[in-house]
Image 1 (cartoon, rainbow, N blue to C red):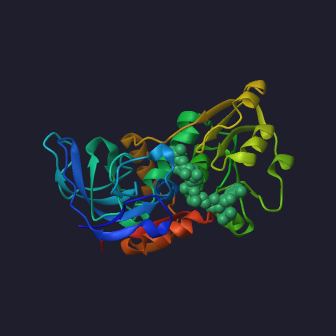
Image 2 (cartoon, protein in one colour):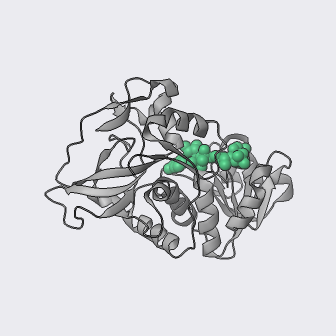
Image 3 (cartoon, rainbow, N blue to C red):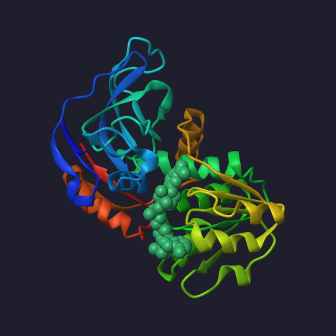
Length: 308
Ligand SMILES: NC(=O)c1ccc[n+]([C@@H]2O[C@H](COP(=O)([O-])OP(=O)(O)OC[C@H]3O[C@@H](n4cnc5c(N)ncnc54)[C@H](OP(=O)(O)O)[C@@H]3O)[C@@H](O)[C@H]2O)c1
């Protein structure tokens, strides 16, 4: 099969589009023919050699897919060849920049029916992150005020729509070019982070969803109400400050939970959540796709089309 592999860490130039062995499946796996693969920051973090995700070479990157089951392992009962599925496979295994991926049967869900594979391939990783950050770790309730940083990005577009669907008051940060876009997506307020200090405008926030870290996280603590919650996709840097202000902090790594994937798919099929894909590249163009994502200003998702 064709795949994009790395043999060492480095820049986008270490990605090699080449022939690779089709994955072997374990008894509790399914083999999925990948139609499209989402591209996420973790892909270039692994490529760059981020120690949290170290693994053996050669390594196929990409942990976000939409495709069709081709084969099921001997212990798999819930799925059959021909089922259209999507998911976020285990980061410790080979990924989805490939024509086929082996993935545990208990990590996938039925693909949303109303969208094509390209749109669906960008949903699982970012959607799970938004879902679990808001509802599992943030315990967001209707009417609460939530501040979402990086609202126009891969995770942000799902967080804005899911928080809105829950009945929260949603405030997002983004640059000027994304203000109208986010208002149309449902944000009640959008703050242009290049022109305005959000911590001077806001107070009494129940939940901050932090996708940035650093100073953004530090300033976020100022706008949270006592007993508020700071959830972060990039780690908690100031635990002591949180403690003195009676704020709960939660850094988390999104998990592949099929029930969460199913609920996200249902919201998409009901038209409540709309995936946003800004760029589609071919598998061969994975390096170009990563370069663009790594520049840090993608609206919604970038995906790789693997099969027609
Ligand atoms: N822990 C987990 O399980 C998990 C899961 C997914 C992602 N993550 C991490 O979460 C982070 C975000 O992921 P992502 O997929 O959403 O990334 P992304 O799609 O690359 O985010 C790009 C967005 O960030 C916005 N942005 C850039 N600088 C900003 C700033 N100073 N303030 C507000 N927005 C800013 C950009 O908006 P403008 O163009 O308007 O500037 C752009 O829309 C990454 O570090 C990723 O590794 C963690």
